[in-house]
Image 1: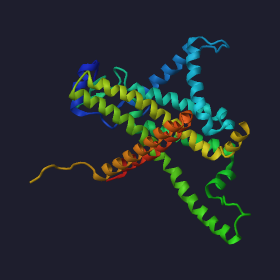
Image 2 (image 1 turned 180 degrees about the vertical axis):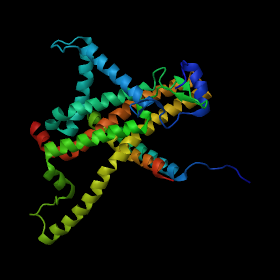
Image 3 (image 1 turned 135 degrees about the vertical axis):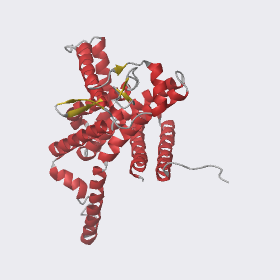
Image 4 (image 1 turned 60 degrees about the horizontal axis):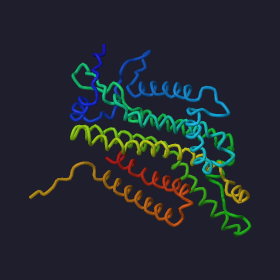
Length: 282
Length: 67
């Protein structure tokens, strides 16, 4: 059904890409049981398999005296843990770290996957004569980033309800945080109404995380992909390489921002007594 | 006489301009703080990335929601 794949290496793809730019919509490659499989899903599967294999090869069975591969993985994980620990708090870091580290590694490699030769440049010709990507970076599809954000939101809900409790969540959103002993009764009640109103705004801003998280990641990755392809059309070989270096940086920062924001959202509710812990520690 | 023509979405452009100014302000203050207190650079990095992310979100609302 599908026409044959045309494997173009770097140079022809730049010429092709200059005419059409990058399609904002992922193209469906084939169907499995009536569910279409798009080119971004294909990238996700290939890279997920590669991540699993790479970790197995690098670490294998963890040893007390690490080999080179294990030391590399441990360095990345412990560096990330040190950055996240003050945000989610000492009590929560052990529980949340697997999810957050997974987000970071997955998003980082998905962002960088756009820079590999072949991703976004292997094209095939459809029946009506357009050149379509056979494989493209997963985060340049809004569906992927939305799925990641929904996962992050579900994780937030789980951690908040499990470790802070429903009561603490409602008090944090709507509750009256003023001190009853320092204020008169009337003043305290009036402040209660204000806190109630603030709570409504707070709920709205929590809901809008589901818009801002996916759009931030999608906008940055798709914009970068588009930039490289367009620059490749204008001045091939040298200029896109410079944009590629910028994309390495952007990919790292956006992966870190997504992880950091997920951590902050959890920490905002679960990490109330962190200040006291710090004071005792010093 | 037409000197130049403006095309594209003006609301989106205004949103992006504001977001860029916001990110710039956060970055400038972050650099200043690291200059004053280099030991706190790790904490400042986290805070500034957060501030930048929140300021940057405005640009995406403007791009995707402005008609």
